[in-house]
Length: 157
Image (cartoon, rainbow, N blue to C red; front, side):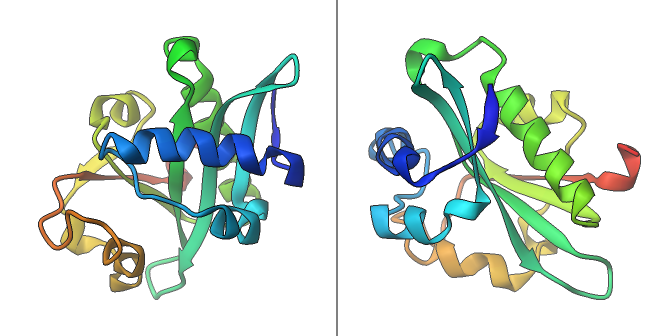
């Protein structure tokens, strides 16, 4: 059910992300940006319908190891609670492992969801400055109220 996104998925991914962005819980992503970053995205499909999406975006390479961010994790509201988000995060983590990444983080309002999957809450200031490039587009910048969570991938091996 989880697969890499294809070009035909862009409108559905955009619809999911935009729905949550309008609620103020996710960053807006224009169709052009989703298209440009399509290789980052996984979708969860059911009978031709996209029920969820998530992206794994490599964002830094520093002395402490390569890092990626799980972005735009969105599940259609009528499909929440069916394990779709968990399956999408697992796909992102598996890809991160296969790429040789060492850590994956997310900025989220759903901290409990991520901690159940082994992520730990950290201070946002411990994350690389490079991640804040997207944040400047957010209406809540610089007073972000999201939580940062991170997982060390060696703990999954």
